[in-house]
Length: 135
Image 1 (spheres, rainbow, N blue to C red):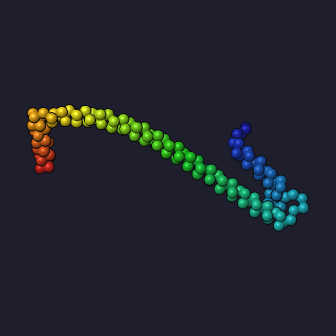
Image 2: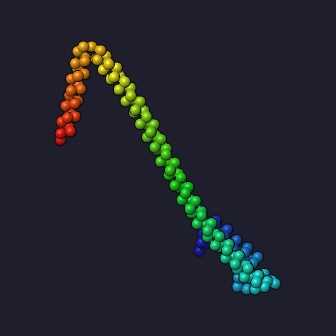
Image 3: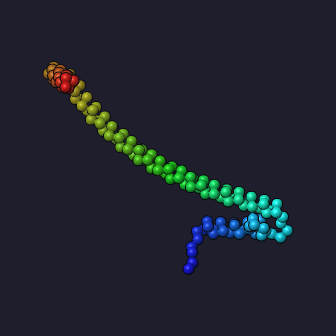
């Protein structure tokens, strides 16, 4: 039965073996000639290194989350830009339609009968607004 280890777990195992070889395991089984003060210092150093490794792992997780968030923000920005481009095209088309309508209304206003039609249209619009406000 073989257990598969990740590359980071194998690297951590190598680092732990190197620490034990240099500083001992913190229980009196250190290099030859080591005193109890050296063992205490080695234990403290080992403890601090493990704590730093844990903090590095936490930071790695937070950096990964920030990376995912920035990717999502980029996706939203791209979608919004596409939507704005589509809206800009729609406004351009609407502007073309309205300018054509305004030209025709202007031509209609230049004739005597056309002025009467504009007055009639404004009256009907005013009537609709009046009836809407009475509801």
